[in-house]
Length: 276
Length: 81
Image 1: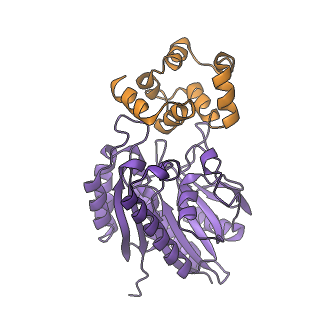
Image 2: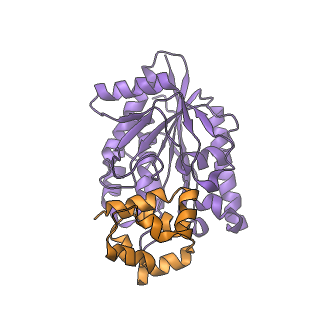
Image 3: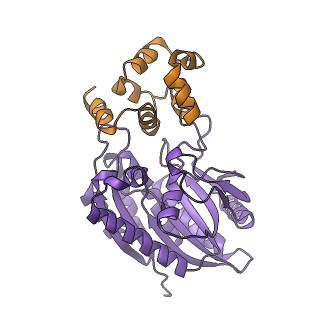
């Protein structure tokens, strides 16, 4: 049977690429170190497959049909469509159709009912962390796109429960492979709204502290606070999926820093596997 | 509120080729969309708050980035019109 190889989370943001040269040296160094440390931890977990949980920034879906959750079940997915992501080395990204379909079927059995796609474009949300973590050869990628862009969005509780479901689905998959999860996005930021550029550091730090407490306290806090912390903060849903997969335990912050040049409160974390 | 065709325009302009055509022949491109005269005027005048009320914030940002407005100017217009 497959085994759970660990959970990881990292921020993303277009300006991490587009404005990289303008990031002050001290912040740039911390961002580089955080991405690299996360990459080191992910590589040491030796995943055969990686479930990348990210938003879709209008790369695949539009108002005609915007799913709450979509699983990529195809043999391959496309690299990022954004012109400024063209230096990302991977244009054709191998999937893991059998694992992805198993997850989709387990989800249906559990009443979760995701959308599925046999070919997705993996935009900067998924690919900036994969790029900056320096993974080189990628494990097989199972994309899971969670709507945190266009209301209505899946509830925070549902996202946490999705993580638990992924864990159960991984551990019931028949092949003896190792499967990790990477949640991307957040922490606080604001895009295309009057508060654009605002970073709520205190909110971010409290969110980070609450990842070390029960899922209930974290979810209650986020339900209350998210509506006034910038639309980009909604992407913390993807961290909740990772947290659920880790069964709400073992959170370990790699680094957090607000970076005004990239207009994101940048967070990086992994979850240690606890045996008891 | 979502103006479907305005949003559709912004969505389509994520393609570099579409943006190039829009910059060169804006009216010809706009004629392909069911965009009302008030919205068309707002596009011509870069009326960011008017457009912001009618589309997704990410699409709005993409549009002004793609058509060459600096973030500082975009944020100023978002806040003050």
